[in-house]
Length: 409
Image (cartoon, rainbow, N blue to C red; front, side, top):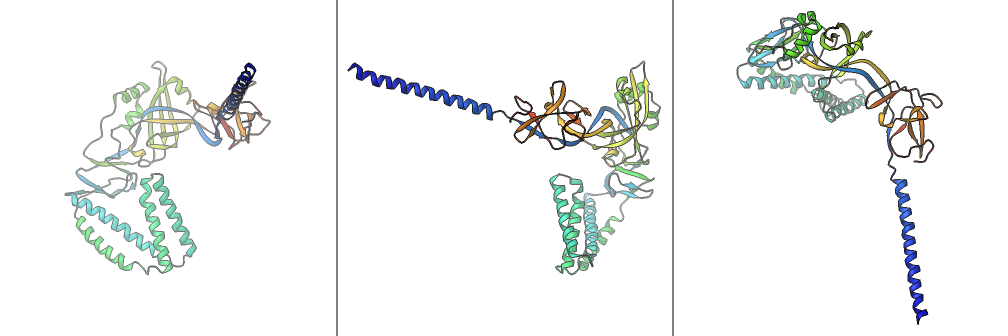
Protein backbone atom coordinates (compact mmCIF):
# COMPACT_ATOMS: atom_id res chain seq x y z
CA UNK A 1 0.00 0.00 0.00
CA UNK A 2 2.84 2.39 0.80
CA UNK A 3 4.32 1.97 -2.67
CA UNK A 4 0.97 2.52 -4.30
CA UNK A 5 0.49 5.79 -2.37
CA UNK A 6 3.99 7.06 -3.23
CA UNK A 7 3.31 7.06 -6.98
CA UNK A 8 0.44 9.55 -6.91
CA UNK A 9 2.45 11.71 -4.54
CA UNK A 10 5.46 11.72 -6.87
CA UNK A 11 3.22 12.47 -9.82
CA UNK A 12 1.69 15.38 -8.00
CA UNK A 13 5.15 16.71 -7.13
CA UNK A 14 6.31 16.42 -10.73
CA UNK A 15 3.12 18.00 -11.98
CA UNK A 16 3.50 20.87 -9.51
CA UNK A 17 7.13 21.33 -10.47
CA UNK A 18 6.12 21.39 -14.12
CA UNK A 19 3.52 24.01 -13.44
CA UNK A 20 6.03 26.15 -11.56
CA UNK A 21 8.58 25.74 -14.34
CA UNK A 22 5.99 26.64 -16.98
CA UNK A 23 5.01 29.67 -14.94
CA UNK A 24 8.64 30.78 -14.70
CA UNK A 25 9.14 30.30 -18.43
CA UNK A 26 5.92 32.21 -19.15
CA UNK A 27 7.00 34.99 -16.80
CA UNK A 28 10.39 35.18 -18.52
CA UNK A 29 8.73 35.38 -21.94
CA UNK A 30 6.35 38.08 -20.71
CA UNK A 31 9.26 40.05 -19.27
CA UNK A 32 11.18 39.78 -22.56
CA UNK A 33 8.14 40.90 -24.54
CA UNK A 34 7.72 43.79 -22.14
CA UNK A 35 11.39 44.77 -22.47
CA UNK A 36 11.21 44.56 -26.27
CA UNK A 37 7.88 46.21 -26.93
CA UNK A 38 7.74 48.67 -24.05
CA UNK A 39 10.78 50.56 -25.35
CA UNK A 40 8.68 53.52 -26.48
CA UNK A 41 10.46 55.56 -29.12
CA UNK A 42 9.13 58.94 -30.08
CA UNK A 43 10.32 60.57 -33.29
CA UNK A 44 9.94 63.97 -34.88
CA UNK A 45 10.56 64.87 -38.50
CA UNK A 46 13.45 67.24 -39.18
CA UNK A 47 11.82 70.25 -40.86
CA UNK A 48 13.02 73.47 -42.47
CA UNK A 49 12.78 76.33 -40.01
CA UNK A 50 13.88 79.89 -39.27
CA UNK A 51 15.14 80.88 -35.83
CA UNK A 52 16.16 84.28 -34.55
CA UNK A 53 18.58 85.71 -32.05
CA UNK A 54 16.09 88.03 -30.42
CA UNK A 55 15.43 90.24 -27.43
CA UNK A 56 12.09 91.41 -26.00
CA UNK A 57 11.94 95.02 -24.83
CA UNK A 58 9.19 97.33 -23.62
CA UNK A 59 8.96 100.57 -25.50
CA UNK A 60 6.60 103.05 -27.12
CA UNK A 61 5.61 103.51 -30.75
CA UNK A 62 5.49 107.05 -32.11
CA UNK A 63 3.81 108.35 -35.26
CA UNK A 64 3.72 111.70 -37.00
CA UNK A 65 -0.05 112.11 -36.71
CA UNK A 66 -2.85 114.65 -36.50
CA UNK A 67 -6.08 114.31 -34.56
CA UNK A 68 -9.37 114.06 -36.43
CA UNK A 69 -11.79 116.19 -34.41
CA UNK A 70 -15.31 114.85 -33.91
CA UNK A 71 -17.53 113.17 -31.36
CA UNK A 72 -20.96 111.66 -30.91
CA UNK A 73 -22.55 108.59 -32.47
CA UNK A 74 -20.22 108.13 -35.41
CA UNK A 75 -20.45 105.84 -38.40
CA UNK A 76 -17.12 105.33 -40.17
CA UNK A 77 -17.00 105.31 -43.96
CA UNK A 78 -13.34 104.26 -44.32
CA UNK A 79 -11.47 101.29 -42.90
CA UNK A 80 -8.81 101.46 -40.20
CA UNK A 81 -5.42 101.70 -41.87
CA UNK A 82 -6.89 103.00 -45.12
CA UNK A 83 -5.02 105.81 -46.83
CA UNK A 84 -7.11 108.98 -47.19
CA UNK A 85 -6.57 112.35 -48.79
CA UNK A 86 -7.44 115.85 -47.63
CA UNK A 87 -11.24 116.27 -47.88
CA UNK A 88 -12.12 112.56 -47.74
CA UNK A 89 -15.29 111.94 -45.71
CA UNK A 90 -14.16 109.55 -42.98
CA UNK A 91 -17.29 109.43 -40.79
CA UNK A 92 -20.84 110.69 -40.42
CA UNK A 93 -22.70 111.72 -37.28
CA UNK A 94 -25.94 109.89 -36.49
CA UNK A 95 -28.76 111.56 -34.59
CA UNK A 96 -30.62 108.29 -33.96
CA UNK A 97 -29.82 104.56 -34.06
CA UNK A 98 -31.88 103.85 -37.18
CA UNK A 99 -29.45 105.87 -39.28
CA UNK A 100 -26.67 103.44 -38.47
CA UNK A 101 -28.86 100.56 -39.65
CA UNK A 102 -29.64 102.46 -42.85
CA UNK A 103 -25.92 102.91 -43.50
CA UNK A 104 -25.33 99.16 -43.06
CA UNK A 105 -28.15 98.44 -45.50
CA UNK A 106 -26.77 101.00 -47.96
CA UNK A 107 -23.31 99.41 -47.81
CA UNK A 108 -24.75 95.93 -48.44
CA UNK A 109 -26.75 97.27 -51.38
CA UNK A 110 -23.66 98.89 -52.85
CA UNK A 111 -21.74 95.60 -52.58
CA UNK A 112 -24.58 93.67 -54.17
CA UNK A 113 -24.93 96.09 -57.10
CA UNK A 114 -21.17 96.04 -57.75
CA UNK A 115 -21.09 92.25 -57.50
CA UNK A 116 -24.01 91.72 -59.91
CA UNK A 117 -22.60 94.25 -62.37
CA UNK A 118 -19.28 92.39 -62.46
CA UNK A 119 -21.10 89.05 -62.73
CA UNK A 120 -22.41 89.92 -66.18
CA UNK A 121 -18.91 90.45 -67.56
CA UNK A 122 -18.27 86.79 -68.37
CA UNK A 123 -18.77 86.89 -72.13
CA UNK A 124 -16.06 85.04 -74.02
CA UNK A 125 -14.65 83.40 -70.89
CA UNK A 126 -13.91 79.70 -71.25
CA UNK A 127 -16.23 77.46 -69.24
CA UNK A 128 -13.33 75.49 -67.74
CA UNK A 129 -11.78 78.76 -66.55
CA UNK A 130 -15.02 79.83 -64.87
CA UNK A 131 -15.42 76.42 -63.25
CA UNK A 132 -11.88 76.53 -61.91
CA UNK A 133 -12.38 80.08 -60.60
CA UNK A 134 -15.52 78.97 -58.75
CA UNK A 135 -13.69 76.01 -57.17
CA UNK A 136 -10.72 78.11 -56.14
CA UNK A 137 -12.96 80.82 -54.65
CA UNK A 138 -14.86 78.17 -52.68
CA UNK A 139 -11.64 76.64 -51.37
CA UNK A 140 -10.40 80.08 -50.37
CA UNK A 141 -13.64 80.83 -48.51
CA UNK A 142 -13.53 77.48 -46.69
CA UNK A 143 -9.89 78.07 -45.79
CA UNK A 144 -10.75 81.47 -44.27
CA UNK A 145 -13.47 79.85 -42.16
CA UNK A 146 -11.27 76.93 -41.15
CA UNK A 147 -8.38 79.16 -40.05
CA UNK A 148 -10.63 81.78 -38.40
CA UNK A 149 -9.42 84.59 -40.68
CA UNK A 150 -12.65 86.47 -40.14
CA UNK A 151 -11.35 89.81 -41.40
CA UNK A 152 -11.07 88.38 -44.91
CA UNK A 153 -14.29 86.39 -45.04
CA UNK A 154 -16.38 89.17 -46.64
CA UNK A 155 -13.96 89.52 -49.56
CA UNK A 156 -13.70 85.74 -49.94
CA UNK A 157 -17.50 85.43 -49.94
CA UNK A 158 -17.80 88.11 -52.63
CA UNK A 159 -15.22 86.36 -54.81
CA UNK A 160 -17.11 83.07 -54.55
CA UNK A 161 -20.48 84.66 -55.37
CA UNK A 162 -18.93 86.55 -58.29
CA UNK A 163 -17.42 83.37 -59.74
CA UNK A 164 -20.66 81.43 -59.22
CA UNK A 165 -22.80 84.15 -60.84
CA UNK A 166 -20.49 84.35 -63.86
CA UNK A 167 -20.71 80.59 -64.26
CA UNK A 168 -24.53 80.74 -64.19
CA UNK A 169 -24.59 83.50 -66.82
CA UNK A 170 -22.13 81.66 -69.05
CA UNK A 171 -24.08 78.37 -68.88
CA UNK A 172 -27.45 80.05 -69.47
CA UNK A 173 -28.85 79.26 -66.02
CA UNK A 174 -29.40 83.00 -65.62
CA UNK A 175 -30.02 85.49 -68.41
CA UNK A 176 -28.68 88.64 -66.78
CA UNK A 177 -29.08 90.63 -63.59
CA UNK A 178 -30.28 93.89 -65.13
CA UNK A 179 -33.73 93.80 -63.53
CA UNK A 180 -32.31 92.92 -60.10
CA UNK A 181 -29.67 95.62 -60.37
CA UNK A 182 -32.34 98.19 -61.27
CA UNK A 183 -34.45 97.36 -58.22
CA UNK A 184 -31.42 97.45 -55.89
CA UNK A 185 -30.26 100.75 -57.39
CA UNK A 186 -33.65 102.36 -56.77
CA UNK A 187 -33.52 101.34 -53.10
CA UNK A 188 -29.90 102.48 -52.87
CA UNK A 189 -30.74 105.95 -54.21
CA UNK A 190 -33.62 106.31 -51.77
CA UNK A 191 -31.50 105.41 -48.73
CA UNK A 192 -28.62 107.55 -49.95
CA UNK A 193 -30.93 110.57 -50.09
CA UNK A 194 -32.03 109.97 -46.51
CA UNK A 195 -28.44 109.87 -45.26
CA UNK A 196 -27.23 112.69 -47.48
CA UNK A 197 -28.25 115.39 -45.00
CA UNK A 198 -26.14 114.00 -42.14
CA UNK A 199 -23.25 115.97 -40.70
CA UNK A 200 -19.93 114.49 -41.84
CA UNK A 201 -16.33 114.51 -40.67
CA UNK A 202 -13.60 114.93 -43.27
CA UNK A 203 -9.87 114.36 -43.32
CA UNK A 204 -7.81 117.54 -43.06
CA UNK A 205 -4.62 115.99 -44.44
CA UNK A 206 -3.27 113.03 -46.34
CA UNK A 207 -2.30 109.88 -44.47
CA UNK A 208 -3.46 106.63 -42.87
CA UNK A 209 -6.69 106.84 -40.92
CA UNK A 210 -7.51 105.12 -37.62
CA UNK A 211 -10.86 105.34 -35.84
CA UNK A 212 -10.98 106.26 -32.16
CA UNK A 213 -11.05 102.64 -31.01
CA UNK A 214 -8.22 101.63 -33.34
CA UNK A 215 -5.96 104.61 -32.63
CA UNK A 216 -3.31 104.53 -29.86
CA UNK A 217 -4.86 104.91 -26.40
CA UNK A 218 -2.07 107.29 -25.34
CA UNK A 219 -0.61 110.62 -26.42
CA UNK A 220 3.06 110.80 -27.36
CA UNK A 221 5.32 113.65 -28.34
CA UNK A 222 7.67 112.37 -31.07
CA UNK A 223 10.03 115.32 -30.63
CA UNK A 224 10.27 114.80 -26.86
CA UNK A 225 10.96 111.10 -27.38
CA UNK A 226 13.64 111.93 -29.93
CA UNK A 227 15.34 114.47 -27.62
CA UNK A 228 15.15 112.30 -24.48
CA UNK A 229 18.31 110.91 -22.91
CA UNK A 230 18.39 107.21 -21.97
CA UNK A 231 17.48 108.04 -18.36
CA UNK A 232 14.71 110.44 -19.39
CA UNK A 233 13.21 107.85 -21.76
CA UNK A 234 13.35 105.26 -19.01
CA UNK A 235 11.46 107.66 -16.72
CA UNK A 236 8.83 108.29 -19.44
CA UNK A 237 8.21 104.56 -19.81
CA UNK A 238 8.06 104.09 -16.05
CA UNK A 239 5.71 107.03 -15.41
CA UNK A 240 3.46 106.25 -18.38
CA UNK A 241 1.98 108.51 -21.03
CA UNK A 242 -1.19 110.63 -20.85
CA UNK A 243 -4.39 109.14 -22.23
CA UNK A 244 -5.50 110.13 -25.70
CA UNK A 245 -8.14 112.80 -26.18
CA UNK A 246 -11.71 111.62 -25.83
CA UNK A 247 -13.32 114.19 -28.15
CA UNK A 248 -11.82 112.83 -31.34
CA UNK A 249 -13.05 110.81 -34.27
CA UNK A 250 -9.63 109.23 -34.73
CA UNK A 251 -6.26 110.20 -36.04
CA UNK A 252 -4.35 110.30 -39.33
CA UNK A 253 -0.73 109.18 -39.47
CA UNK A 254 0.86 111.55 -41.95
CA UNK A 255 4.18 109.79 -42.42
CA UNK A 256 5.13 106.59 -44.20
CA UNK A 257 7.03 105.19 -41.24
CA UNK A 258 6.95 104.92 -37.44
CA UNK A 259 9.53 104.70 -34.68
CA UNK A 260 9.93 102.51 -31.64
CA UNK A 261 11.69 103.98 -28.58
CA UNK A 262 12.97 101.68 -25.84
CA UNK A 263 15.70 101.33 -23.22
CA UNK A 264 17.84 98.35 -22.24
CA UNK A 265 20.85 97.47 -20.10
CA UNK A 266 24.36 97.95 -21.46
CA UNK A 267 24.90 94.23 -22.03
CA UNK A 268 21.86 94.10 -24.30
CA UNK A 269 23.01 97.27 -26.05
CA UNK A 270 26.32 95.53 -26.83
CA UNK A 271 24.38 93.01 -28.92
CA UNK A 272 23.38 95.86 -31.26
CA UNK A 273 27.00 96.81 -32.02
CA UNK A 274 27.42 96.82 -35.79
CA UNK A 275 23.75 95.95 -36.35
CA UNK A 276 21.97 98.29 -38.75
CA UNK A 277 18.82 96.34 -39.62
CA UNK A 278 16.59 94.09 -37.50
CA UNK A 279 13.12 92.56 -37.50
CA UNK A 280 10.44 93.82 -35.14
CA UNK A 281 7.12 92.30 -34.13
CA UNK A 282 4.57 92.66 -31.34
CA UNK A 283 3.23 89.21 -30.42
CA UNK A 284 -0.56 89.21 -30.27
CA UNK A 285 -0.88 92.29 -32.48
CA UNK A 286 1.64 92.26 -35.30
CA UNK A 287 2.97 88.70 -35.31
CA UNK A 288 4.81 88.88 -38.63
CA UNK A 289 8.35 90.28 -38.10
CA UNK A 290 8.84 93.50 -40.05
CA UNK A 291 12.10 94.99 -41.31
CA UNK A 292 13.34 97.91 -39.26
CA UNK A 293 16.41 100.14 -39.20
CA UNK A 294 18.47 100.80 -36.07
CA UNK A 295 18.61 104.61 -35.95
CA UNK A 296 20.17 105.15 -32.55
CA UNK A 297 21.96 103.32 -29.75
CA UNK A 298 22.83 105.88 -27.06
CA UNK A 299 24.62 104.55 -23.98
CA UNK A 300 24.65 106.07 -20.50
CA UNK A 301 27.56 104.29 -18.82
CA UNK A 302 26.96 105.91 -15.43
CA UNK A 303 23.26 104.98 -15.30
CA UNK A 304 23.86 101.57 -16.89
CA UNK A 305 21.14 101.97 -19.52
CA UNK A 306 20.98 102.62 -23.25
CA UNK A 307 18.38 104.20 -25.51
CA UNK A 308 17.40 102.33 -28.68
CA UNK A 309 15.46 103.86 -31.57
CA UNK A 310 14.16 101.71 -34.42
CA UNK A 311 12.36 102.90 -37.55
CA UNK A 312 9.95 100.74 -39.59
CA UNK A 313 8.57 101.60 -43.04
CA UNK A 314 5.52 99.30 -42.83
CA UNK A 315 2.14 100.70 -41.76
CA UNK A 316 -1.16 98.83 -41.36
CA UNK A 317 -4.23 98.91 -39.11
CA UNK A 318 -2.58 96.82 -36.39
CA UNK A 319 0.55 98.95 -36.27
CA UNK A 320 -1.45 102.18 -36.10
CA UNK A 321 -2.94 101.01 -32.79
CA UNK A 322 0.48 100.63 -31.10
CA UNK A 323 1.15 102.46 -27.86
CA UNK A 324 3.39 101.08 -25.13
CA UNK A 325 4.25 97.56 -26.31
CA UNK A 326 6.48 94.59 -25.57
CA UNK A 327 8.26 94.16 -28.88
CA UNK A 328 10.34 91.24 -30.03
CA UNK A 329 13.43 92.45 -31.85
CA UNK A 330 15.25 89.88 -33.98
CA UNK A 331 18.89 90.88 -34.34
CA UNK A 332 19.76 88.04 -36.70
CA UNK A 333 17.83 85.21 -38.30
CA UNK A 334 19.07 81.74 -39.22
CA UNK A 335 17.60 79.26 -41.68
CA UNK A 336 18.18 75.52 -41.52
CA UNK A 337 16.76 72.30 -40.11
CA UNK A 338 15.12 72.34 -36.67
CA UNK A 339 15.80 69.59 -34.13
CA UNK A 340 14.26 69.24 -30.68
CA UNK A 341 16.94 69.80 -28.05
CA UNK A 342 15.81 66.70 -26.15
CA UNK A 343 17.17 64.62 -29.05
CA UNK A 344 20.76 65.80 -28.52
CA UNK A 345 23.37 63.22 -27.44
CA UNK A 346 27.14 63.39 -27.09
CA UNK A 347 28.91 60.21 -28.20
CA UNK A 348 32.72 60.01 -28.09
CA UNK A 349 32.85 63.77 -27.84
CA UNK A 350 30.66 64.32 -30.93
CA UNK A 351 27.33 66.14 -30.76
CA UNK A 352 24.59 64.34 -32.63
CA UNK A 353 21.19 62.69 -32.65
CA UNK A 354 19.79 59.23 -33.20
CA UNK A 355 17.83 58.83 -36.42
CA UNK A 356 15.35 56.07 -37.28
CA UNK A 357 16.23 54.23 -40.51
CA UNK A 358 13.68 51.47 -41.00
CA UNK A 359 14.05 49.33 -37.84
CA UNK A 360 17.55 50.61 -37.14
CA UNK A 361 18.78 53.51 -35.09
CA UNK A 362 21.77 55.45 -36.36
CA UNK A 363 23.84 58.12 -34.61
CA UNK A 364 24.40 61.12 -36.89
CA UNK A 365 26.62 64.09 -36.11
CA UNK A 366 25.27 67.64 -36.26
CA UNK A 367 26.70 71.13 -36.67
CA UNK A 368 24.88 73.86 -34.73
CA UNK A 369 23.92 77.10 -36.46
CA UNK A 370 21.87 78.48 -33.59
CA UNK A 371 20.08 77.13 -30.53
CA UNK A 372 17.77 78.26 -27.77
CA UNK A 373 16.31 76.53 -24.74
CA UNK A 374 14.03 74.32 -26.88
CA UNK A 375 15.53 73.75 -30.32
CA UNK A 376 18.77 73.41 -32.27
CA UNK A 377 19.08 74.72 -35.82
CA UNK A 378 21.54 72.93 -38.10
CA UNK A 379 22.60 73.47 -41.74
CA UNK A 380 20.31 72.00 -44.39
CA UNK A 381 23.14 70.48 -46.43
CA UNK A 382 23.62 67.34 -44.31
CA UNK A 383 25.80 64.58 -45.79
CA UNK A 384 27.06 61.32 -44.32
CA UNK A 385 30.77 61.47 -43.51
CA UNK A 386 30.77 65.20 -42.71
CA UNK A 387 30.41 67.09 -39.44
CA UNK A 388 26.72 67.52 -40.20
CA UNK A 389 24.97 64.31 -41.29
CA UNK A 390 21.28 64.97 -40.58
CA UNK A 391 19.15 65.76 -43.63
CA UNK A 392 15.73 67.29 -44.17
CA UNK A 393 12.82 64.99 -43.21
CA UNK A 394 14.98 62.52 -41.26
CA UNK A 395 13.05 60.87 -38.41
CA UNK A 396 14.84 62.11 -35.29
CA UNK A 397 14.44 60.02 -32.11
CA UNK A 398 13.53 62.53 -29.39
CA UNK A 399 12.53 59.97 -26.77
CA UNK A 400 13.82 56.44 -26.19
CA UNK A 401 15.95 54.19 -24.00
CA UNK A 402 19.14 52.19 -24.62
CA UNK A 403 19.94 54.13 -27.77
CA UNK A 404 22.92 52.77 -29.67
CA UNK A 405 24.27 53.20 -33.17
CA UNK A 406 23.22 50.28 -35.37
CA UNK A 407 20.87 48.77 -32.79
CA UNK A 408 17.43 47.46 -33.69
CA UNK A 409 14.49 49.49 -32.52
